[in-house]
Length: 253
Image (cartoon, rainbow, N blue to C red):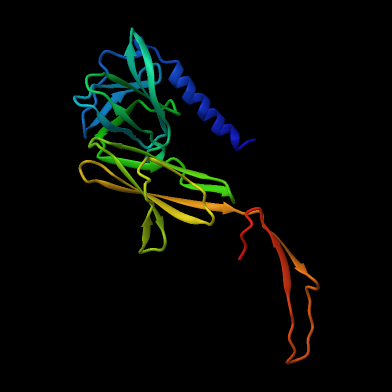
């Protein structure tokens, strides 16, 4: 229970940060984020530092803080005078910094709120970058029971469309086999053994990202010795050992 408490407090704080912000909190002098530039903002009396950004072209962007302290951030846009929540992140960046990856649209102004878990910080530096190709597994390790299906999926962003997906079975360190007909961001199949699957993601600019998955198959295998488990025999004579085995999959080796 003690281990769960910090996690629960983090979740509660993130929800409060997302729901408790109001459009009037955004200071008029909030600095504008510039691509590939470190921008610093002052932490306001509300405990938040605010930034804004209006993309000139739609695309995938990465926004992250550069700090020695733990940060949490929320991304909004304004409609009819109200802040509309877009995204939130806590520790996806380095050293407990936030990192938000999102698709942002041309001409829409976005507002970023950054807050610390300590009251001793007076400013924060944030960087905005355009993403070439980003791809990650929604779940890197998947365990299923024998006979059940497994679904592997990838989240991918790129400013260079289209994005293509190719799924492969890894046979060893130097060889693989392509899975025919699987060209979507997810792949569902029925594994019969532990194996490694890779999704090769590419975009219109030729960028490539390889996303690995490990699939574990759990078989409810029952094995029992037939007869004695300790056998004695004279030198030169034969001895027979036997077991009975059963599994719901019905296939044994």
